[in-house]
Length: 411
Image 1: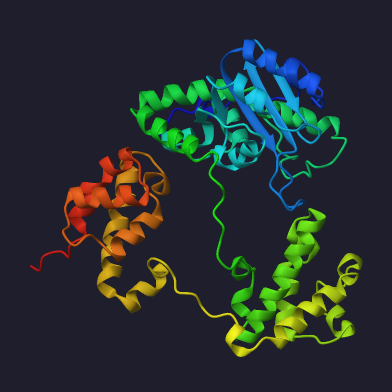
Image 2 (image 1 turned 180 degrees about the vertical axis):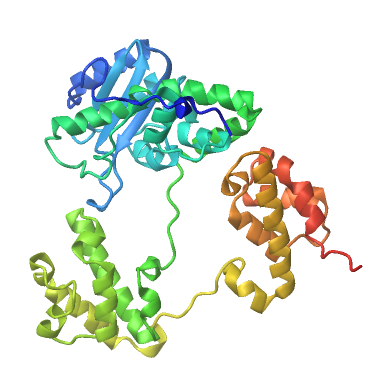
C-alpha cells in the first residue's frame, strides 16, 4: 500500500480557519473583475470547489464557488447575482485545475461557463494510488496531518445569507487541495501510474461540458417500485412521479421534499379516490402535501382513465441482463463472466487498484455476454475501446481477458 504519513501515531491537527482568513463571497461584477485579475496574476495550479444544494433544490446548480491559487489567495464567489463566470474561466484557461471528485462539480461549473482544459482529481488520483479512504477529509488527515470538519457537507447551500461557519468550511475545502495534489502526483509517479492518471483526467476534461444523460422512464427508479404489481398500478406511480416532478421544478425543490417515494408507492398500491382516503396514506399528512391533494388525485384519475394500450410496458433492456439471471438464461455466458471477473480482481489486486477503476464492470458484463466472434487480444482491445475503456486499462487487461473468454479445454 502507499505510505501513510499518519501511521506513526501522531494526532492530526484540527484545521479550523484558513491561513489568510475567511473571505466574504464575491457578489458583484466589479468584485468579480478584481478576482479575475488576482487569479490571472497567480501562479501554479488553482484549487476549485463548488457547493450545491443537493437534497434541497430541484437543480444541481452551484450556489458557491471556491478557488485558491498561489499568489492570489482564496476567493469565494456567489454565482446567484452574477450572469456567469466566463471571464474567470478565460483567466484560468492555461491553468491546471485541482478538484476533489471532479465529476460531481464539473456539470455545475460548466453551467457557469467554467470548463477546465487540464485538471487533477485528488479523489481519483488517490484511488489509482491504492488508498482505501479517498474522501477529502481522510486524505488531508492521512497525508497532510490536518483534520477537516465535514459537518456542513450536506447543508442547504442555497441559504442566504450563508452563515460564517459555513463559509469557513467552504474556504477550507480548497485550503490544502494543491498540497494534496502535489503529494498524490509524486506517489503516482513513484508507482509508475502517472500516465494512467493523465488519461483519466483527460477523459474528465473531454466530458466536462457534456450534457447529462437523460434516462428513459425516470419514474421507474422510484424507490420501492418493485412492490407495485400490475401495469395499472405502475401507471399510477408514473402519473404521481410526473405530477411531483412538475411541482418540484416549479418550486425549485428536491422532489423528495415535495412528496417522498414511499408515499407515491403507497398511493399507487391503495389507489385512493377521494381526499380523505388519500390523506390517510402515510406521507400525505403534512400540510404542504395536503395543499396539493387535488394535484395528486388528478394524477391518479388520469392513470385510472388510461386505455389499456397506454399503460406502461416493460421496455427491452439494452445490453446484457442483470448478472443474477445469467446462470438461468445462458450458463455458458455466466461461466465466462466469472472467469473475466476473476481476471479483473486479480489484476486489480496486483496493481493495488479498485477493480472498478481498473475497468468498468459494465464493460466486462458486455464483453462476457457478447464476445467478439474472433477472440484475440486485438479484438478484445478494440471491443473495450469501443465501450470507452482507456488505453492504459486495455493494455493491462485485454490479453488476459482474451485468454479466458473461450471455454477451458476439457482434460
